[in-house]
Length: 311
Image (cartoon, rainbow, N blue to C red; front, side, top):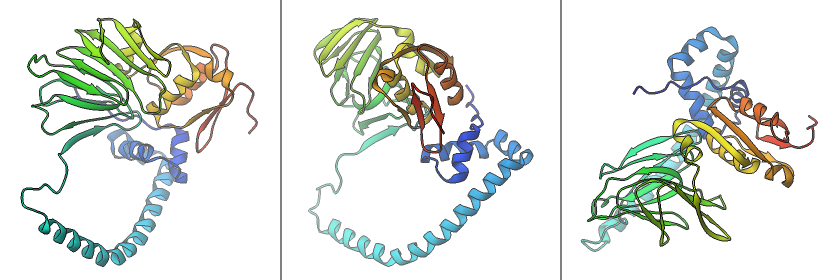
C-alpha cells in the first residue's frame, strides 16, 4: 500500500507557523507538506503561502547564524568533556559495561500512527503520543513496555509467553489480538480483547470483553469493539463519551491544546463519527450537537465554553 500524501495544513495552523508559535510536531507537519508534491505546487501558485514560507526561512537563517557563533564558543569545552569521558571509560574494569542493557524505543507524535513488526513477527499499531520499548534481547524474553495506546497481534509461542507492562497493568498472552490504552495522564486504563486469551493483573479476559482500571478498582464488561478499534482506521468515533475525554483524544490526534471551562460541560456526553477531517470542522459539528457549546481558536490553544466567548 502506498504512503498517504500529507494533507494541506489548515489556515489557522499556517498562521501559527508564520508567527513562530507552532509546537515541534506542528512544525514537522507543515515542513513535510511544503516538501511534498502538493505543497510545492501550492507554494508556486499561492502568494500568501510564499510570504509565510519566506518569512519563516529568513527567521531560521538569522537564528542559525547566532547558533553558529555560540557553537564555536562551546566547541573547546565540549572537546574537554569528551576527553574526560574517554579517560573515565578507559579506567573502567575490563568486562564491565559502560552503559546499561540496550533498549529499542519507538514513539509517535500527535496525529501519527505507526505499524511495527517485532523481532518475533508479532505486529503492533502504535497510536498517537505513545511510546513502546523492548530490550534488545527480546527473542529470549518477549516483554514490551507501553505508555499510551497500541493494538497487538501476537505470534503464538507457548515456550515464550508475551507480556506487556504499563504503569498499572501487566498483560500476559500466548497468541492473541488485543488493544491497550494506558496513557500516563489518563485516570483510566483499558484492555480490550478481540481474540485469544489474555491475563491482566491475574484476571483472565474472554474475547469481546474490556477491562477498565480506575482509581476505584478494576471492572470487566462486554466491549464495544467498533469504538475500541476505530482509531486504527483513522476514524473519530465517540459514542456518548464525555467532552473532556473527547478533547483529550483530539489533543493527541491534532497536537493542539484544548481547554474546557466549567466541570458540567466537561462531563457532558456527545456522539460523533467521521473520518479524520480538519479540527475546526470536528469542533463545529460537535458544538452543534448534544447540549452544544461555544469555542474559540487562538494562537496558543482552543477554548471551549458553555457561554459565548467574547473576543
